[in-house]
Image (cartoon, rainbow, N blue to C red):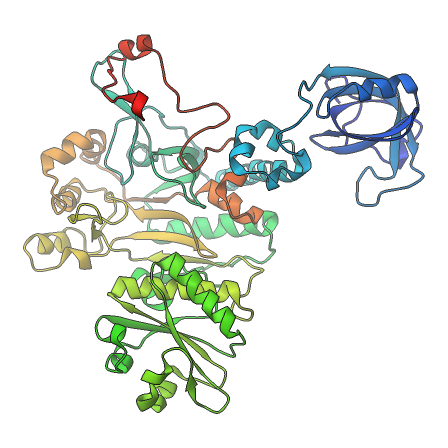
Length: 593
């Protein structure tokens, strides 16, 4: 051992009985029995060890300390009379002959009990994250993260990939999210940007002649927090391959991820290659989402033609989707809660009815279906006890609602989900373009550097008005596991002519492309190889493996939902001198904010 310790606090066993040892750690707890007898628990990174205080002077030292002070003790190991089988060190105890205070805790009251820190308010946990991390249950997620990153790195190197780091200070580019900007002191009025991803750099590495690249890459995006997304920064397993197709990327990922999920995850079962592949439109029609959880054995059906004229006003126009939950045992109270939960998540309520044991349609909207009962039963293949949930509206709205219904049925009711496994799939053939929600204009759906299916020819047809750009698909793909998107990826558009044509459709000219992506455009003009890549999110992988609901549980020092670091008090104001050096003036009235 190092640091003057002979053993750590999770190490001593019966074979150490009789040894004189030196231990160090945090003073976690004390239980006094008499004036010269007490039991003290010491904790370090490795575990806990019980001390038996049989000396009045040593007891005085501990009684003078606040809990969470750090101490060093010297003493003799002996066998415990009352063993604790729940602890690795539960067969022994240490009788100290000397105690040295290494770091005194100067507060009588802690913000929370260390062992129960996860029960504290999240803002308090984040402000005192260094105390939160002392909780072994919190710490184990960070240890898991370290082990997973090491396993990912080894797997990639075993597949012949080189780990190459790319710049953190780079140029702002339109990649879908807001940039974090860094003002330049030496170039007034100009700004660096923190990379949203190493996208351009890894493609430039392919044009430089590097065949297989990877990096545990930090990415920076000024976007709002979600349960599976941390604001500010995140890490991804960034991968790129030269002279590669979509199939080559799939083969690597399908070889790398399942063993890691099997070894480090909550479940031993993980999909074996090849993973299920689902075209985007099929996923939306069948599962109501492009992130389907294939552990759930429920799918959606289009019943627009069957039900549109039934007299139920919401079904009068638009698309109607249905999902059948067989042998449903839920009560009316559970159905009402289910509908409320769906409405909260989807923004609109679902409708429902059941087929009872007498073969009658009952409950919900069943009164509107009596004139076509037999057609409904036949078309949906209903059997006694089946429960039918329906959604309606514009196509994407109806799909979204039924997707939430499927997810909620799987989560809330038994029999519709195989929970104890990791089920992977690829979503392929994403739309190349979409109409932006904010702009109302044609935008890239995923990655602007993706190769369209049909290449230059399909883009020229769209330019001439012979093809609707919204029908163009791309060699873009997502990898999804248990309903969580791990990553997007694509076969890259490595041809300058195709690149210019693709950007022209979203209103960017050749000069715009050359000015916004000068390095990539010029590099491609020197003969770029076909290349493809993907970038699974490390934080999301660890979150799934740890079985936690929030990504902040697997990040050592996360920001809160408002992109604030409560521990370091960031973001913060800076001095006028700093602003002047950067040629920046604050124009907002900050005192009113």
